[in-house]
Image (cartoon, rainbow, N blue to C red; front, side, top):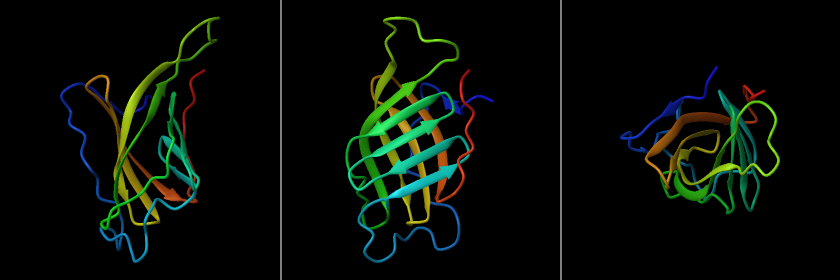
Length: 140
C-alpha cells in the first residue's frame, strides 16, 4: 500500500481534529502533549523538545517543541525524508526535504499535513491518537 501523496497544485490546509469535543484545545494546552501518537500510515513520538515521525516509506523530524495556538493549531518547520525499498547504495544521499508540519490537536487527537517547502508537494492528511496504535507499511 502506498502513502497517500498529493502532488503539485494541492494547497496545504489546516485540519480540524476529529471526534467529540474537538475544535477546542482545552484549558492550558500550549503544545502538542508528549507521548507516542499512532494512526493509519503514521507514528509520531513527541517529546518536550522535538518530534520524530515515521510514515509509510518515509520519516520526518521537527527540531522544536510543537506549540499550539488558542484553537489547538500549529505550524512548525521540520524535515521530511522519502525512503525506498531495497538496499541503500554506498554514498547514497537521503531524499530529504525542508517541510512545514501544519495541523491541530485537542490533546487526544492529532491531525496534520506535511507541506514540502522546496517543491509544490503536500503529504497527508494524517490523523493519530495519543497512545493509539500506528499502522505503517515499511519499504522493503
